[in-house]
Length: 457
View 1 (cartoon, rainbow, N blue to C red):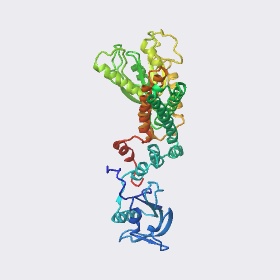
View 2: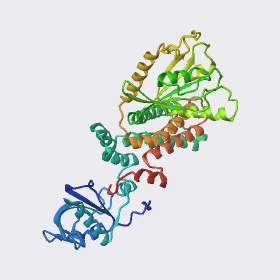
View 3: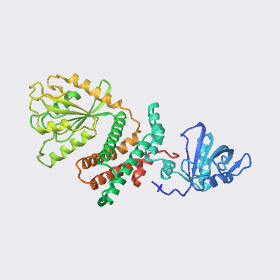
View 4: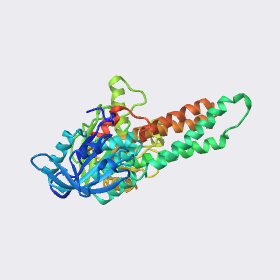
């Protein structure tokens, strides 16, 4: 991809949808945009484009090459920095003929412009501070919207629905960091720039805000893809038997030998018309036997982190282990159902709230489990979201790291480990939030985002 950070040259591209139409649009932006258009311009009123000092619409004809000749057009001219790209810009509105639009684009390239790269207009708007990355992605969301709901989500994000709360959050953290660092500079003066209570309140509010955003990201991804259901538990906890019973075939090897599943298995299944991807993972030992076990268990953790629903399998024929207790206390990435397996053998576990008793052998509890799965997945899909899919996929990891840093900052402050450590965690939180809005970015991130745009946007 061309170096899009060079915004000094003039670019041109067709800005309307491909195919014929009543009206088509060609966009031009750059320092010499008006001069390029002026080379083939024939105004109706005799006025010169170079004389324009404020945005306006003018009518006339524009040269489109020797084959097409002069074409009647309306020019939307921004001679100042008030355009979409904050550069002198011109939008050429004319008949929606593909041949005419291509001829105009070629004539403008011959006049000194070059063909724009995909997303280059929006890239220039971002680099000029016209919008942040979440709003740039919302532009693509508007283009790709397949429903009225998706369009509404994209328009709200484009209007600052995500940028505004993130800016407010970053401003509060920057103010808090400034107070902390001032206190560190004047530590010998016994001056309190921020109280301990205010520090904790701000950090806890930050954590709650990040939790809400992370939930929206998860909900947006879940609403646009197949539901991913992951079975997780200790070795020989009945996961593979349950997996086979849910899928309806003997996809997984079943054995009384602990650790039969060393990899993960995937199978697609529909329950009442709802498409699911079922994933059977390796059992998790408290002490892995070898490197293969460690890798298999790491893959189990990674699968659970991407799950919309986790089925935490607990062997009902055995007493609960320390691992079972700890796993039930952990916060899952999505929803969770605790499933008591092997209930046909006998139930020896203590009461587990809201757990579903099942037997893959007899089929007991399977209908109840499937109904509960659908209820949990429906609740996940119904979560209100104001985030377009592209933003969700890009930002989930940054928001997770920001939330983790904010949580560590709360712990450091609550246990009074020192304001230096609190300040370090706040800086880490700000860095991750900066990646979300584009205050911190790299070339490969920008290329990955804007290369998904069509040319002319």
